[in-house]
Length: 307
Ligand code: SF4
Image 1: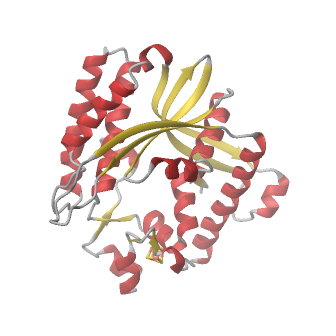
Image 2: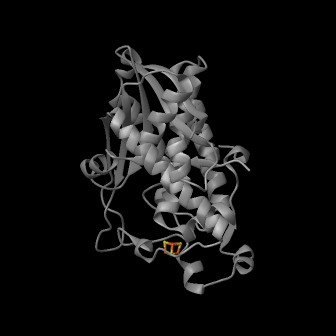
Image 3: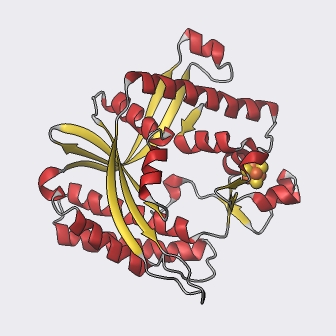
């Protein structure tokens, strides 16, 4: 058996071991998708295909065309796979028009950024020290760290990792909260280890799309904005990241070994939004019942997804 960990697995285990059971042991996800999630996924796909096309040598206008048409296909696929009741301001039209505004906003990228890789899938075998093996007894001597890095660029002769993020909130707040992001530290550590190269840091590539409902129920003016924020990590930060990662992964495999997946009730509502799995927990269904619950479908593994 191989012991694998990714940012998403660690994040889920930390949020709630019961959610980790649903996602990583029973492979269930809600059939109902969300507007923000759909917008964010398609934004990522458009960005990744655009930059990948640039790396492959396409000129800018062909890369834009390819990115938008792939985004359109992915949008239709998403709507087929997940039930979305109605459209709202986070539409495909808004997504493509924001993408074109993004390219205008960063028009100097062509001179200042050299694209090294887009959507890079990496794996690294982390060897545990004797001390770590004693502290984390549910892990074997080697743990596989996995991650998909959105974009790697060279800027002023230094290598940077770029992570695309969309938000409907105030960007200053997001930048502050993601400054200590587990995800960015994971990518920083992973890339340096796999490529055996020093990187300068990580850059959050934020896109804000927000609107408020008016009294009559319609959406008000849509705000579109962009910001990039550099995040630098020291050796001590990465040492702390490694301890946190192994501790949580050990916890994940302990739950599996003991068949104990407690509900973390403090995580059922975050930022006033209910957890996606709240219906399963409220019904207290058995694993067998969960597997046939029509509101939850089998997760498609990343390697089998078209986008
Ligand atoms: S609803 Fe609460 S207990 Fe259930 S999976 Fe979500 S966070 Fe965990």
